[in-house]
Length: 215
Image 1 (spheres, rainbow, N blue to C red):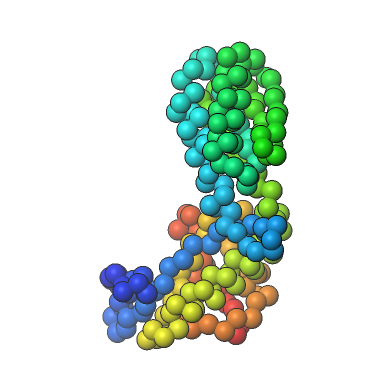
Image 2 (image 1 turned 120 degrees about the vertical axis):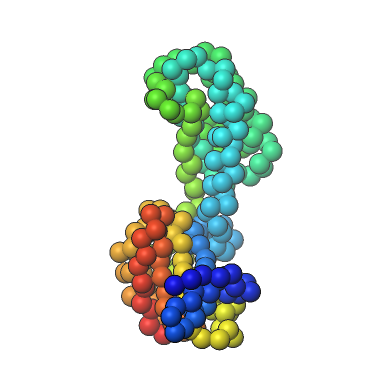
């Protein structure tokens, strides 16, 4: 087997001894449920907060005493990114001036919850790290998987339906909470007409699972 770049679409071609297959590639990311009733992309909203934590570690982390770690919890989405960044930075700087081991502090910044825990620094850990909670996301893994699959398959079908057959769709899973069994169950509950001969789920560990969706 050999691989070659495609014309976008498809993303690539796989050549076997007697045949060639077009392969389209997409990513499976969790949706958010916006107040106006539309679906958003959680990865986009979360990445803003994760970059903030990385910036705090770069700019303020070196000011922390040795063996001290700040765990920063952020809630997204935020109303005003620039204002949130400014006030969050000021909050973290206040804590860094006198970090009391084991302490926990909270505040609201422009309507979004922020928490800071002062804990011992683990080996090889960053001085400032944390986590992100998304207020517009759903904890229903089954619902999320069905929505993600349906959106990706319908979107890619519209792009690829006029390509010569056979066409495969490879879906890279960025929704880490969901495993292959979650997607297999979701696929069994969907009815979607599509042009793909085969549908493949690819995990971050490069494990490939074929999904079956009836038209």
